[in-house]
Length: 230
Image (cartoon, rainbow, N blue to C red):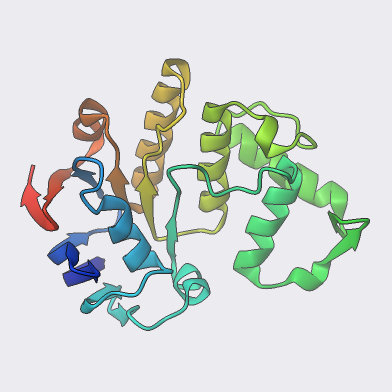
């Protein structure tokens, strides 16, 4: 279980998070609603890093995450997505895949640099693994295409695939529908359901209230730094 207890964060004299407490169980989707500036993204930044909390406690399956680095949290199974996509736009789909995979394994020695491009020592094996991953996410993209050239929906689904590659136990998602067309919205919904069915706990931040309610086991609202049951 991911446990957040009495989390508080203040910027100057503005208290953005005021004693926020919630828990997410394996396979559970918890929705979080709130107006712009309510502190939703700050909550993710504090739980996952890089922002430090003023007070409170975060535990993952009993392990205190409060003072751990971002990398250590990822290794323990805590991941996130970003409102404006956390992938490297100037790198190809294949290169982003390699970075995501080997960042989790911490085995960058299996990669080499060739005129600034990232190459694996076993290219055919990696291409086959990426093809399987893209197929599982029903994403048809050219692996040598730069991520910045993908559509908003394609890049969002690719980001979800890259996060899934890390074998997370919990994912904190910051507006997974941002920039996604209506056509791909349903696919994102299916992907999140499949992730939850596989046992991954999800905190879902999204402005689309209907989308959040349709997916979530529980819904909360963040207002004035405090959490209210939605």
